[in-house]
Length: 186
Image (cartoon, rainbow, N blue to C red; front, side, top):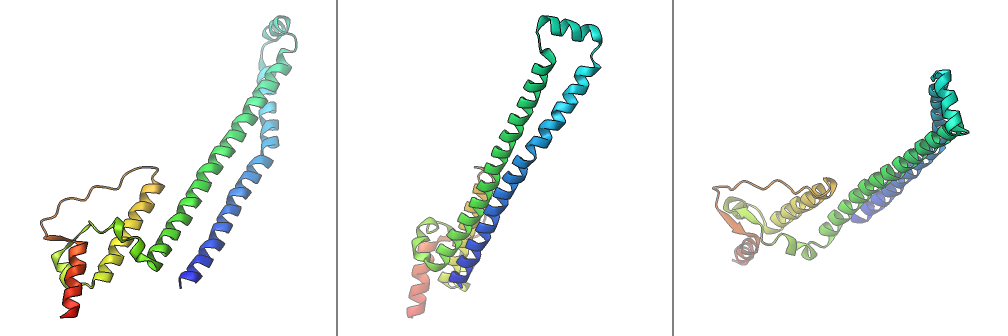
């Protein structure tokens, strides 16, 4: 089951990475058309200037219209390239988060003993401790912890909501495991 899940994850990760590359390719191929569009808009604006303004601009700076066209188009191309780069990073980060979250889930499923340290101080209700096997409680706490890690990462550092205090009796996971082991031996 875990091996199949890893294969599926690897396949999905490669597919998602192809999406990032495709996005970048489409973005870059669209830049020449964008540059042409900006150049045409700027030309219309410059042509709309009254003749006196155009003449004064050319007297003050030879090649004024050509310079404005080149600078405006260059700025648009630079902004488009920057947007593609930044958006690609955000998209790739999101994909990486998803892949890493699933890797952690698979790892916790295969080797829960390596993850127990992250949840051993968490509390469970006495009623849950009495009616639920220790391994099931461990798995539930690990799943909650991994969900919390995943949501924290996706929200770029936002911390999970603080749990409200409960009036229900609480005990530590270590005590629960001890209690279940003693109960199983009896």
